[in-house]
Structure formats: C-alpha cells, structure tokens
Image (cartoon, rainbow, N blue to C red; front, side):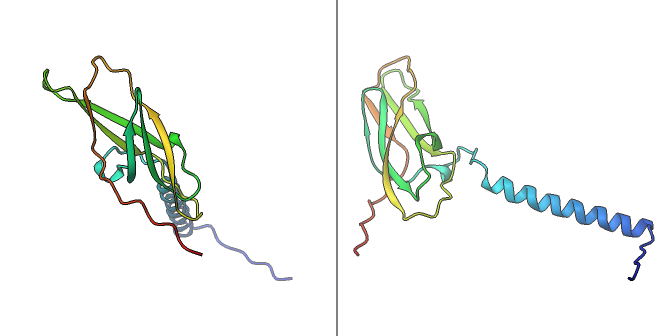
Length: 138
C-alpha cells in the first residue's frame, strides 16, 4: 500500500481556501436565481391575457407551466393624484416565477383589492395585454 503525504504549506492552504470560497459563491448565486422575484419593476409585470374588475377584487388570466398560484402575484395600486379624477391604476406583478416544466396553459386568479379610502369610478390595468394562446392540436 502506498502512503501519500502532502506537506501543509501556506500556498496549498490558500489555494484550498480560495477554491472553497469560489464554490460557495457559485452555489449562493445559483440559489439566489431560484428565489422570488422581489423587484416591482415593469419587466416583472405579469403577462395578462384577460382581466375584469369585480367589487373588491381583480380577476385575470395568465400563463402557468404547472406551479403558479395566487401567492405568486402582488397587486400594486395607485390612485390618481387629482381629486376630481377617480381612476385607480392597478399593476399585477409576478413576485415568484413558475419553474415547473409542464405544458403551458392559461389559468385564472382573483386577487383582492386593498381597502381604499375612496371609491373609484374607473380601474385601469397597467399590465400589457397579450393575446390568449391557441390550444395545441393533437
């Protein structure tokens, strides 16, 4: 049996430490890419196919590959600054991506509107509307 001996010198220890740090950094970056999307920027606006304002909620159709649920969305509302204009601007932001690999399909969700101080005569969705995808033929 052959015995291998490695001398513990400063260069090897520093190299091993550097390699460990690089590996942990790569793993941390990989995990952070899978976390929720925290930004409320326009590129995170959900793709909406159809929507309707109800009494105290917004109903909408969006895309899912199998793992999307209502907790993956957040409503951002902004009242018109004008006292006479009773328009409420609503944005539907996707805060968590759907990483499932299922067949893409449209799904419906309904999110409650926050309690608002004033009643709005008009609700405007700021998300761009997309055309409902056609079902694949078999």
